[in-house]
Length: 613
Image 1 (tube, rainbow, N blue to C red):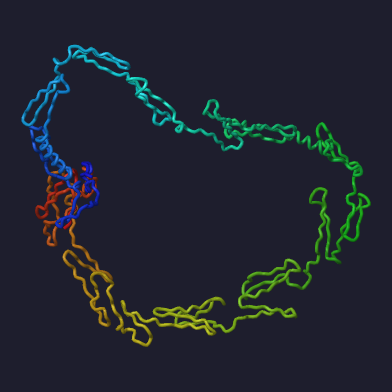
Image 2 (cartoon, rainbow, N blue to C red; image 1 turned 180 degrees about the vertical axis):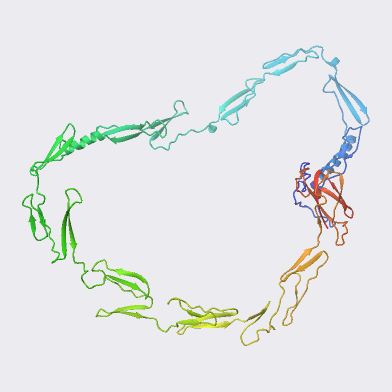
């Protein structure tokens, strides 16, 4: 596809980056280009022809190659057709017209006029059915016949149909039949998500083909026939979801009266009735619904019978006393009686007068390890048990004569472990671990057996990079078996990699390269001079040549003639945006040492030049 002029100025020319050649290239072709991406940048090519009047420009500047080829073919074909094509103008079918030819060079001009003398002297035009005639028939007011046309159309999105029958009912008349496509009519169905709403379809109502839907909701009404319950309608149910709601509450006044009437025994359910022999009376006021409970026997006995499980003591009169007596000498218990803690209350207190303080016993047992106390054991009662528990490697025993034996189960241990340096190593606890670790070029290994063993191994001596010795009998400085090999790459730095004599290669800097090194690395640096400041902002105009300079010099300080130049846009123009590399839109010419010229094809604006040498 040919590139448009709008994106022809972009670096990619508006074309795809891949072009597939359908046929094999001739052997001499190293590259193939899409003709839609090749632009003619010269001046317009013209061929002026005042006789034919053909436009003078054949190929314009910025035409693509495929467009230019088409214009060249059209240019020649247009002239060949002029020589081979004849034009004949005749009035055979129009006797009232006259034709006058005029030849000028290769161009023939035909003038067509109305021959008024050939027209009939008079004519009358009348309108028929569905026709209207205007005009008088004069030369400047001809007759005009128009049909009374009616256009009938239906919306394509509707369910209407239109059938046209131009043969009926007669000439110049058209019959239109408008119908309804039932398959396009919308289908209406009623559904509900509410279980209390019922939908009934009545077909052919009110007319044939119609359907009427009845929506019904079961109406619920709640009334109370009991004065103790109040019913309130909280929602009428005339809006979605069409539910009627009620609140049923207890009438507290009526319910209270009902409860009191029931308790008083007025109602059939029964009530509170006094036992005639109990000395209790029950009265009820039906007007105020109040129950009054009284007594008829006066002050009752304060207690009837007290028993210890063997002997029963029965009160003989309301003035009888219950006595609680304690003997501190015989039983070690004393008793006291005091008023309270509440009104009409009394409290008996029984005290153990013999708590063991007069006996030869230990009240507290202190625990320590020969220093400060680590805790005490205090009996909470005279039946508490003191428990002794063995610790790590300690066992306890008790003899039939109530002797407690404490045994130390640790045998055969070292008090200290002494090393070459660092002082004695004494175990911090009986569970401490002694670790034996290897040092430099030393390792240890342990074996768990009847007699546990620790083996100390010598792992060899490091000689240098890539050289090691091993064992304890051979000389660790002998490296006859060591071989250096290349780590890969194009060039190997190993010259002779077989010991004991080893040789390596050196690195020499070539042209444009410098070397530097430290103790562990070699740095390779390219000697490239860069100049991006000489032309930091220069205005250019498309098609015009600008003279520019650079300061890139060689090692001797002489300015370079042939350098690498890249041009960057500093503004948005001709399809480019600021920062684009527009070198492809430029013609760059090296003029002399330190001087060059830049000509842009389409870009106009400020540029920045980067020069490398």
